[in-house]
Length: 283
Image 1 (cartoon, rainbow, N blue to C red):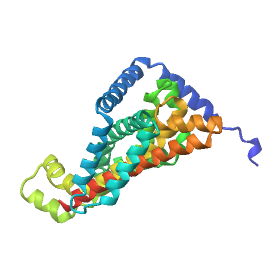
Image 2 (image 1 turned 60 degrees about the vertical axis):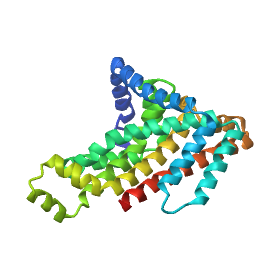
Image 3 (image 1 turned 90 degrees about the vertical axis):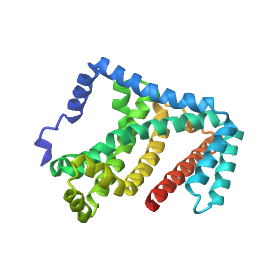
Image 4 (image 1 turned 90 degrees about the horizontal axis):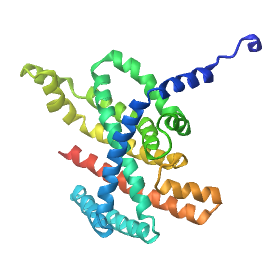
């Protein structure tokens, strides 16, 4: 039945669209330089801090955000885990991975939070953005690497761009949900006091939605970490590169060791962002 129907040249259309985008080299070079400068700034800071001081700072931050619970198990895990990464000579790779995650997460937040606010304020924007977010979340992660390489070349920046696209939807959705769940009574009270839309947003809606927003930050950060590991295939440096090379050499030992370092980093980031969410909820 369908044999007589001509096949849609979808792949050809997409190739033509990418070729058209490649013409704007000046724009993409500017984006590459901008993202690269953020990434390099993070890496410069991590290279500047001595390893022992970095470990102390992570432990101090964990203790501060968990000061009401005194989670000694997490502190011991972080201390031993970071020492093991140092001992296995993965420290530089770990900071490179952390730099990619932080850069991608920062950009995802800067773009995602305003989009979430727009979705909460505009029904039309919600109708338009929801299918786009569904597309971004369900598209296989490897597919994002192809246009990223075509537009930004090989290296850290295309990995960050692909990570931003893959990791941004949770921030948008959770911001939208958090603002929409603000009680109507509070909105009416703010209106009765003559608050402007900006005052309601920054003094009522965002503070109350902060818990949902932080949950979106946590999810985006975890998705960024998973994506930057995959981005090692297009030249993004870090622990993912160690895993990628180990797979190519069928080196189970080094691959498992690098994978364990990624797990340690993921748990630390996850627990820290969850602790920040709990501290915001209490306040």
